[in-house]
Length: 168
Image (cartoon, rainbow, N blue to C red; front, top):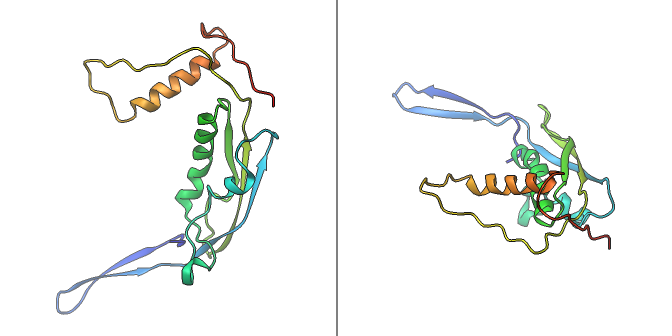
């Protein structure tokens, strides 16, 4: 909710009732969001990339400032990278250059997101399947398979065919 440091205090009243008092501290909002796209062939527009770090808004009907949600901002680069890989940019990278932590005193936090989409790859004529095994699959097995496929595609000595990047 935009509060960087919330401190709970536990109290026991004279009648034995327990109370929790929370000192919410200063509230932080998203300041300027700068998106630096290192290469020109990024399929996601800069305005859409900004939305990866944006949080909920305050005020009547969401017309107020946007709240700084640290977990959302810190997760943005990985979400951008995953989406670019899904669009065929297997070498995609994204990083948070600035804006990882809210200041103790609250106020606006400027965020700088740097994106390097890399080449666009097309796989032609191959099908990847996950064979069932007698062992139960872990919840993250699909992610492991995706990572293994991407690593196999990146390997220079891979038996898979050479990829043709789309240059248009």
